[in-house]
Length: 422
Image (cartoon, rainbow, N blue to C red; front, side, top):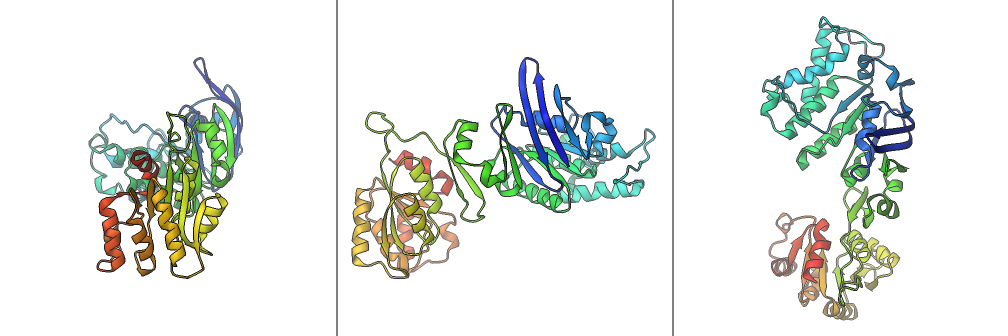
């Protein structure tokens, strides 16, 4: 569908892109990722023909985009820009209808063009209405574009691009102005469009959204392609360090299973700021709840122990892979006296004890009672206690008490919280 062939672009005295090569297959969702200033927006502008490369070319459907007329290019590629500023006082419906301009003659009638054989004005109107419905902007179709929020304008511009009815859709930070609910809805819609056969390229700031939704990633850094391929290959820790000059740990998200990137703070410093390990942490969890947290804490430089874990637990495999100190028990066995004493000893030695989203049942009562002896407790919750309906049991009473005396945080806030506590 798209070939980027040795593209180089200089703006003013700054070389933005240099020798960029990539191939984007038909019906793929490709994410452009990279640090600010890497050239993501510039590459998108070369792909839609707005910028002409100093050397190289962008080929869309076997034609160099620069060789096409403006209307012909706009029948192949639609763009949703990052800047949603619109100063003219048209209605939302009129703005979306502007997506039909590439198919209109100068007298206003719609023209056919090969694969997009849309010669009926009624069909064009239908596309406008369907596009507004898919992007959830129909409810304010008659309002002025200047009277709606930035997030709503972003969705209007997406509707305009859908009404343009092109095989290729380019998105420049499509969720930058959206709340988390509409971020997810937007990417779900894009996935539907790709399933219908559209080819989508999007500059995406959020690496985790890119990893979850994109088929492939193109990582730009310093104006060139540093890595390309599936998210699992591109989002490697060493590659991210090179691209972003930052420390990060890459793991699998415990719910979605997709690649998940967590930026790490500077290593905790003790002993006069030597940068050595920031302290000891004991983690209580299991049943698949703590693997990602073990990766994060270990990568951040803490001395980590974990347990009690039953043999066969997936978290135990992770702990052994990381070389951590683990307290174990036989498969499906209750926590025995020896294991209980071992855990209590590690909790006493730890600077912080992390309780990781445990199931609140009788099987974990011994673990919860052991955590009660800790000096500092951080409770990590994927699900709020109020949603668990365990009220009244001994384990629930113990868990609620731990929540009241410790810090209750989401997984992404664990490192910053532990750093403050220590």
